[in-house]
Image (cartoon, rainbow, N blue to C red):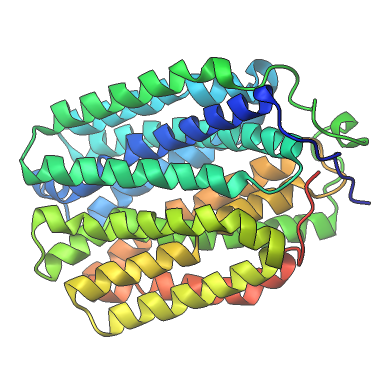
Length: 399
């Protein structure tokens, strides 16, 4: 039976914690997005083929897959607040190493470190965001992901500007990474104190991990994972390939970063609106509408390739997937019978499969045909969401 916490007006503690979590999400988006407009330069400087570049970028989700399942234990030992804020330093270190990597192997190794540390921080920041959401008694998780999009847009613009003026890569990523770490550490005192289970009701907090993992729960977790993967495939296509694809269509280096910026900017708008839409219409209807937008928007952009049309297509796709990852995480966190954080950890780990498979798959297809064909994974992801949205709740409830 689904249990709910009593909704209360947020007090100073809750408002401070919401601000703190929002800033952690923002810096998490900022620190990585700075490098994305520099990918064409890195690819050229290291003389990489599309497939080599895609495999190197895929080292990031490999690191995430290997490290992601440790997040629960780290959160239990150190609390989500500490892991989310202090873990940002490890991501920043990886980004600096990316800037100075002299070869394909070291570039891939640096991406591996970024992915491993980001996976742990990602689970921690969402776990803490769900703690705050339970205190609010209504949907606010999309607003945190909206601030991630703000950080990603800001990082993408910073990276595009740095590329446009040919700022040295090491100086650029060193300064942007330092800024992210300073912000993340400074907001740690704003986050919630106490035990990770403090806001839960009923017997869920007393269960051991995996004890409630029956066949139905496994199927639902897999479905939620595929939905989250569909969102990450779209996001990854924008972050990894948009700049390269736009340059192939004739855009300059400064304009090439706008595909990613458009995706993240429209995703931000979707996430700002997302909490109200989810509370009114339910996760299922919002996800179905989003899947249709991805299918139509990027389908048309790829069928009629132009620089403005492609930028617009990535924007529509970003709006369409805006609520998918928060929806899958929230639905997994509410599954009855699982210990706190178990569903979230599993879906977050499964989500990384999309980041692992997408870059090399698109790269191999692009080398065999052309990048335009490889990017068909984006409208295909929209179609998958249309089919699987039925597993999401029709109406929201916040435990």
